[in-house]
Image 1: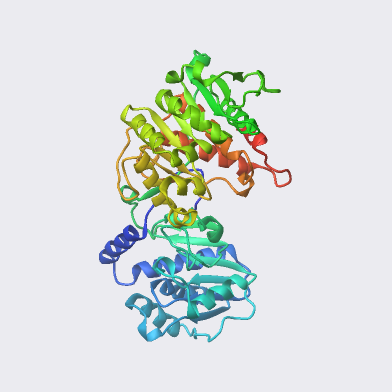
Image 2: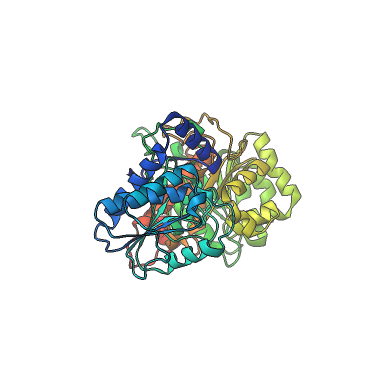
Length: 496
């Protein structure tokens, strides 16, 4: 059993693939083996996270996830722990595996309680797992409400009941710990997943890894970037930040500052406001220029940060000339509103020019012609659809930011040949970023991310890898930030 942390990449498997792997494993093992392994793993983790629990409530559902909970109840009971066992549904209608576990509970002297205990300090949520395909209702909804109203530690078996294992959506149990069994699922790490799962643990049930069948990856830390002694500022590329209309110059300054902190050789600030000034106080390294006079054909450009309506006027030239391009904020809104700009963006792909889009859910909805709710309902599909439609890498921001590359959807697999050395990092599959927290929910942090990506692309990183690396490090700063002081965008840029 392993604690899932952000210090390595992890393969993620959707429900369809997980079920296929489960069927294959069950066919190769004696009957009931997988459920017994799952129950023992659950009981061990429960004992580790709540060793002094006075009352353990095991809330079991009508399927095989309930069977895992029944197995855990047997072990905890045998270890002398006070167990209260509830079972939703008719025991006579349990599937064969779960029925065998119910028989083991009865043989161990465990009775079925009619009501949850009034006071409990540990609850094992074994109601639904990955079997949930609809909104909670009736008895199951009442049990979930009782779990969420309680004060104790909650351990979800496989997936918090009610949460979609593929998308991270749905009303669900709010767990303090989740033990994902056999595979890790994408929904644990994006949308509501990170809030509902608590600390995620993983047990492969003693089965061989099947990484080649993954449907996505939880991104790991980027490899350290070596800077050779025999190098100079031209070795690390030039970045131009085009944005900063009147009243919003600060957004462009934040992006440019982040590009500097990320190691770009030279950074040019190209404000759209006519009175932006020739020098940014406290940032003498930034050179203020007009984008039209720069050789964008040799540069990485971050366009849109604080651009307002003015950015639409410069976008045709930027889309045509920029060697590498990060499109953010108002640049995305302009593209969503103008078919000619969409065509110009697609032409970049035809010419082999690298592009990353960094929308938040509202901007993604505009680009896709749908609502924010529809984007959030399936963040992985939304990101992969954007990548396919616009022919560029996409970083869909939010809890569990999703990075997708063009050419493949979330179920297709391949290698993009970018030379990446980390497992999963060189695969053209969606990646979910595991770092970051609500401290990033403040103005300007997206501008910092855009500038950071541009600096990595200026130094030669492939678009999706630049987006994934920047998102990981951007979030890691927030994870390390002390509890007291607020994390401002300026402080974030300086901490990169």
